[in-house]
Image (cartoon, rainbow, N blue to C red):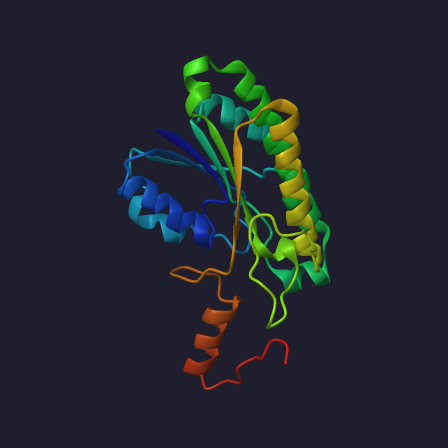
Length: 218
């Protein structure tokens, strides 16, 4: 099985790639433009594996992205590449619009061309998995029901709006072009190699250094 992962040098992507290789022995191509939140050190354990390869590519670069996909010929595409910090999106939304909307469009359009070109056997196992966020559904009050996949979209930040836009593009490519795709709307994650500006690692680091711990909201 050949898996192409976008954003594989990020926190979730790196953990995912290590799982795909160490547990399932899948062949993985990691595409990442290596932003501030990327860390190839997280992949050091499998970096020399014959099952692993890496390309420094920005998903906003259509031609480079297309070349990678058509050369690698993936059975699955797992799309994790995204700008993902709410506070950063409030300070400057441009990168979020470019990566989360334009980048997702590029990936979908190339996937359509690739899917149309492969034979029926490969079509039968091909999937495009778009990793989204529960932020697209807005926020909950204490007495509200939990979000489910069919909850109404109500993004409240530039980050959430950009991810919601990406979700809508995926659904449009499914319904218009027949691309076999799924969307997962993850809640907050925590684990090894998470970028330290996120809540839990930030809180731990502040506590270890006897610094004030930030409170979000009231």
